[in-house]
Image 1 (cartoon, one colour):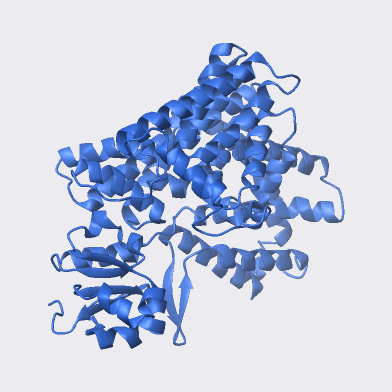
Image 2 (cartoon, rainbow, N blue to C red):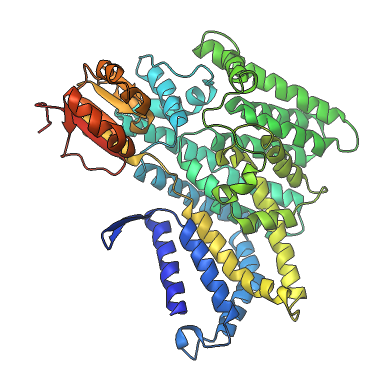
Length: 553
């Protein structure tokens, strides 16, 4: 029974990884199975219990499958097969990197095309900036947004798509995501080159680091988005490689320029500068560190000033707005988190095993350790924390994890006959590694507002009638709904004020509310304002109301 449960849970995890999961009905109850988190925890407990009872019976009661033989096979997989096979893939390095890179790129494009929704308001505003210029219209966006990334990376891809006839928002959004998927894939060869530089005598480190960074959930999921950090991580990794190349001032200047460019994407990337300085001048403040600091400052100021002057009409305006909002006013769009938040949310950006391996593979003498832990420590001091802020650290996490993995393999070999907890750790390493890989793969699909975009497409077919929407960004914002006038954003708080709600929806034909808001407020308020549910719309997240006698046919 326990063995069958393990196989069933494993099948559920694999199914969620492959399909993204879904909603099923069990005994009249709706069960959401969209993430692998809970099934993997249950599976881990079941495997541990089965290991503890391994002498009771063979697996599935089949005599040819004794549990001890399966454990031995797992040890061979970890100790012999993975290091050898990983190195074999890159026996011809550039061919191996090309194959892995193409697979990663195609996977990200597939995820981008099959998941058209949005992650947050940030990605929608990127398109509002780029598509606003492309289509010759002006959409108001938050004044702390830098135009550098949208206009230099997203806009050109959308312009090419428009030139080939792709004028719809779906096509233009996908074009921007394909550009990010393509550029972010450069992290793979950069990780290889850096790891080979760090350990020229051991190609296993580079091979494993490439596989780990390719599997990483942040690299794949956000690499299929239009957000800037997957691209900025390429510049950070390139800066790290420049520092490793030699000790000339020119490479320090190149590294500083690359770091400054990364900081122009998102200002938090400037937190790599202390790590770079520690790498260059740990014994004394060297000339190379001074050059790096100077070129970083010149790059970020020059790029930000030029981008803001062109888009906003005032140099450094977005920088000033961001500093005022985050540091002076100490505001945050999503609240405040404690300093240990990144430890608490490890499953959101990696797995416990890979982080433990990274800790085991870190040391002061390894430059990648500085580039991994110093920025994480500094980010932990800032009030707001999200897993995506750690995207640029993933190449360094992968290198440290690969080094830790090789140390774990050496320890497993050295403790072949050790009893007690050492035996448990040795024999459970393979299944824990399998679950960790599945956990990372389960995070490849970025949680997006796919239903919101489907609703926007449904509404676009209705013409240009006005609409009031809760969480407008979930429907793609103005790039998707600009034809609807008036376009009003409503909140649950506004709906509790009948007068304000009546004024907000006075000239609209449609009202779209989140399902919970509809149950709590919408169903009681909107009928009195002349609206009823549109039963032709089917969705889990949104409820659509239409003005009476104006139902779409």
